[in-house]
Amino acid sequence: MSSGGAVQRIGVFDSGVGGLTVLREVYRQLPQESVLYFGDTARLPYGTRSPEAILQYVREILTWMTTQRVKMVLMACNTSSAIALEQVRAEFGMPLLGVILPGARAAAEQGSRIGVLATPATVQSQAYGQAIHEARPAAQVWQIPCPEFVPLIEEGRLDDPQIRHVVQARIRPLVAQEIDTLVYGCTHYPHLDPILARLLPPHIRRIDPAAYLVRAAAQELDVLGLKATQPAQPTRFAVSGSPKTFGRLAQRWLGYQPRVEKVHLPTAQPTPTWSVTLGPTL
Image (cartoon, rainbow, N blue to C red; front, side, top):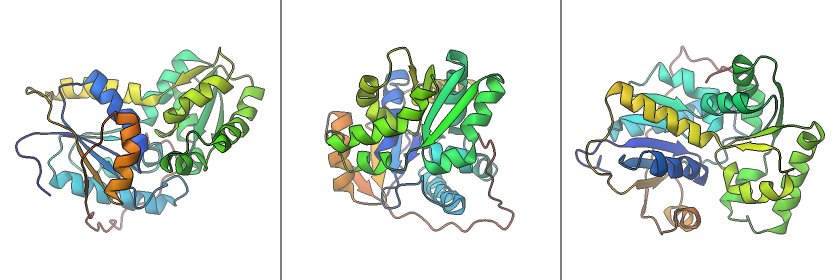
C-alpha cells in the first residue's frame, strides 16, 4: 500500500469501529487534517486480551503507520492507551497521544463522584482512577468492566433489545453510588449514548474522552508546527480483518460507504527490555 503521496496524515487506530468517535471529532475540530484510520478488526476485542498481547498489537500497528509516514498518531483505544502508551512512546519517533489522560482530566473538572465504564483490561490497569485522582485527589471513582459492549457494537446490534438490559445491568451499581459524572472509558461506548441517555438520571454528566483527545491533538499540532496547510484529503480506511464487514458497520456512523483496504501488519518482535506496566501509563 502506498503512503498516499506527499500528504502527511494523522494516524488514528482502534480495535474496530470504536475509533470512529475520535475520527468524528477530528472532522469537527480539525477539518483541514487528512487522516489514516486503522481498525485491527482481525483481533478485536482488545479489552479481554493480555497486556503482553496488547503491547505486541500496538507495536505492529505503529510499525506499519511509520511506513505510511503519518505525522502523529491518536491511540483511539482506551485499552491500548492504558497498557501500552508509555512503552511505545520510547520506541517510536512520531508524537503519540492517548485517550485516557484528556478524558480523566475532563471528568475531574466536572465531577467528584465519577463512574467509568471500560473494558476489563482498562479497569485492571487502574489508569482512569489514578489519572482522575491526580487531577482531583478528593474524587471518588468507581470503574465497571463491560466485556459485552464491544462485541455487541461490532456486531451492529444497537437495536437489539438485549443490549438495553446489558447496559442497564452495568450502570446499576454506578447509579446506586449516586455518581454525578460518567466516563465512556472505551471509544466504542459513545455509540451507546442514546441508550445511556435514556437509562441514566438526567443530572449525570456523560464524558466522551474523544473530544478532549482531539483538543489536545490540536494543541500539539500547533506547538510542533505540524498543522496542515493544504485542504484535507479523503480519509484512508484500513483494517486487518474484513473490509466489507467494517465498511458496512462504519456506514451507520459515517453516513457514507467508505472505501476500506485490507492490510497485513508487519510482525514486530518485542524488545528484551519491555516490561508490562499496569500503572498509570497515560
